[in-house]
Amino acid sequence: MKGILFDLDGVFYFEQQLIPGGIACLDWLREQDIPYRFVTNNTTLSRTNLVAKLQRLGLPVAEQEIVSANYAGVLFLAQRNLKRCRLVLRPEAQLDYPPDCLEHPDAIVIGDIGNRWDYDLLNTLMNQVLDGAEIVALHKGRYHEGPSGLVLDSGAFVAALEHATGKQAIIVGKPTQTFFELASHSFGCKPEDLIMVGDDLINDIKGAQQMGMHGVLVKTGKYRKALVDASNIVPDGCVSSIQELPNYLQSRMR
Image (cartoon, rainbow, N blue to C red; front, side, top):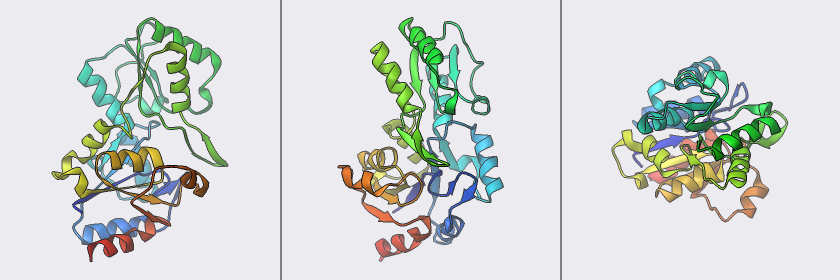
């Protein structure tokens, strides 16, 4: 083990509350000289604003330690030199993107916009895709944990556009190989030397395992036993919460 990748939402915090044991876990990793990074499909905030939010919660996180789907989208557009983009993003997530282009975009960037989804918006986006715009999905998550339970994530609306237009979206966040390569690059080691810790079977565990990483599922956040039991994705390890991770790692280091 030469490094750890952590999901954030559902692992270290939920809504505006830290999950117990997260800060102690990071302290222990620093004492053991084990590097870590945070990989998140968060699309509601710029990386700067995400760090500010986490620090307000009390989580000691630096901007260079975070790779978010929102940030990966910015890098992807710059790489492809796509400047005429319709941004289906919350205003606070648009900070690092080119100006929002509502008419005749070359690409439509889709993230989480909550309950702003409606038929008229989907219909407009469908026609822009049919006119040639690419669908750039920051991720294709099926659901996430809301205040009163699981709620639809933006992946459901991306799938609707794919079905209506016959055009496949370009996915830039988890669980894509490109995203995990971007996140693991700074460790300077092989993927099989890294551990991924998350609460999502598909985006965290399957995505990491496809790269040869060791996937550890936490039983917090969006974790549901019934969903795990019904899935053919088998985590390499499972802990009740981030609080138990040091014990899990110590048992592997013996």
